[in-house]
Amino acid sequence: MVFLYDGTFEGFLTCVFISFQDRLEPMAILPPDAQENLLFESREIRTDESLSNRVRVGIERTMGTDAFGLVAEGFLTCLADKERKLLELIRFGMKRGKKTLDHLAHPSVHAVLSAVNHMHREAHLLKGFIRFEQIGDCLVAKIEPKNFALPLLGPHFADRLSGEKFAIFDLTHSVAWLYADRKSQLVVFDNVQLQGLLGSEVEFQQLWKGYYDAMAIAERINPTLRRGLMPKRYWAHMTEMQEAVNGTEALPEVRKLGVEGWGGEPRLAFGSVGERLAVEGKNEGGERLR
Image (cartoon, rainbow, N blue to C red):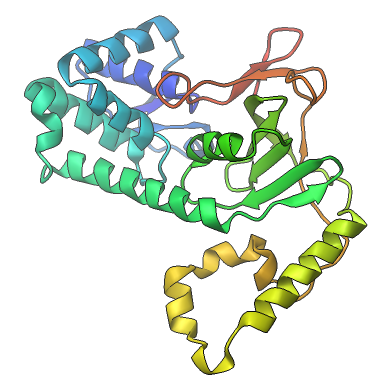
């Protein structure tokens, strides 16, 4: 049996409830982007927030709030077959109770903890490797993380850049964190070009690259060490690692937002890691935006 769900955290928790209620152990729990060419019997699980809330309460009461936090953050990781591994962790935790996280050698605990630690390391590196560019009246940055790290990065930069208007585009997951007038929002975006860089921005980028190159000591250049401290997969969006800086910019265009300072409809909603990890919205007709 394979469970099919809508890819949201609430949808996953609904799958957990159905698994316990019907005493089923699905071979896999698949989001929409992995539901093609299925060879096994499948069952579509519709998201039910009342059931997902019951699962959340049950995990916090039996396993503890830290364990639920681990499940919530584990859902953000790039762990292969993460839904199945999270279900295994929850089943184990319901037997072990609040001592679940003490069993570090258990396969499900180890797998999820390792994935969450990997996500936090990636988020930590991104806090230093993100490069903002001035586009219009907004600071814009692009990232391509393996994990869905925006919920960890957004609050950090909202605190550091509280007086600015900025957007961080996650090109891997097609989601952006927007911040304006001290309000934040996660939204999905479409592949449309934004306006080009300002002339002054191009000049500043050229100055920064020139400074970076001038400060380098040729005799001490160590490519292996640099790749270890600054992995090469982050270089694509770092100004100092570009061969040249020019005035063109191809970025996705964000759908209009319901955040003051960003525009109007459709309104998209999001929640915190421990509450609503799903990025979703509705148009005027009440239809979900995906």
